Length: 564
Image 1: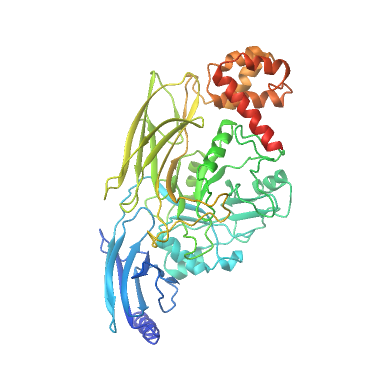
Image 2: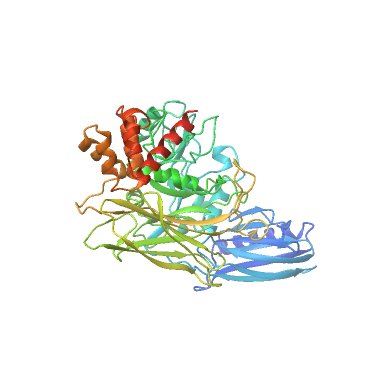
């Protein structure tokens, strides 16, 4: 009885606080799950008649995160004060849920706004992970308190959030309990190891544990310290395309964009790399993917992830970019973190900025698998899903970083499955990896204030087109049938060994392989002191097939440019 009285009194005080403001009207907003009819955490967006985020007044509460025109609520309810006028109220819960809206005329009285949303994109066997999140409270910039962060995480349906405060290991579980969001997620302690030579997310970690040597300028020393941190299973290379402390980890003097070689001696020995960071988008959205492709070709079993890097409630939306990782969990508050780490490192993960892309080979092998078996053809099925308020217009299939097939698609209005395509391709005679990427027009402030994509904060050109993206991690193809996978670098090394340093023999052997193997062969030759750009090496290349000659020439053009 006392608990009910206290809750009622708290609500009354909150209503009085709202009505005591200059607002002309109070909107009593209630959002429920359309299937269960139960209140659900969500984001409520209030837009005025001009389509802009409206000024609002809302009583503070541990269950709310409030900014201009935006309220995140952990229980689906909010009392929102607004001036007189015309408004549209939106309710969302991340990219897998439907969008609900209602137009309201606010006058001198209160109004009830009742909305229903439902999960539209089903992805059984996966959990949603944001592996890069912050708070003002613990990282020192942005605007989100720890309590607000947990409310926003529940409101965007991030089931496994990983705290990555700068050089600190913070447990979000107490804040989940304080905000009533514990049932919606499994918080994991991590750390963004913020160093002079790059940023690395690590997890899981011990709360308040000793951080790795973040002051060091030696990447090898940093990574060794990270690996020695108790409990850490996953290391992610964060936004290597951005400049921090005057260092850009993948700048042209440090990284060969075709071969994936480290040119400055610093290792790229992380488990994962951010190919989408929704708070630090790239002007060229495919650049991070191309560099990841180069790392895969170089023989690094590095996994692609998406993350938000959000420090804010609304300026950069938490969980906007995310990773769906294989998990046997049936409840978001009971996720086996060890299992998720194991599956992530195995590449059983999908990268999402709005869209969800899945892929299967011959109906049996999925993302993270080694596809083997007889046959001269590969049937590669790609399915793209997205909430009804999203669209996709292109599906691409890459093999060893080369575009093998593509299809323009037209998302039918009000559909969840944006594309379901089967590409029939000849099975390669050598091993290869496959990645599928779907994309579509993305929302911005003008078209969708309820989920806008942020412009690049370190742009490389003036123009920018917001794009939704859904990408897979690789399926590896056992083309030669030996029961294991050999990367392009492995194949190139074997060909180099078989040629015994004879450039003519090597170049001739390369004609049976794709450009990725040829580029790796040029890199192996250079590393062993055989220069294919001059002398006998260049003469051998002159007599090669056009495809081999072009790939080797491209390798040296990039190498020269990156060294200038």
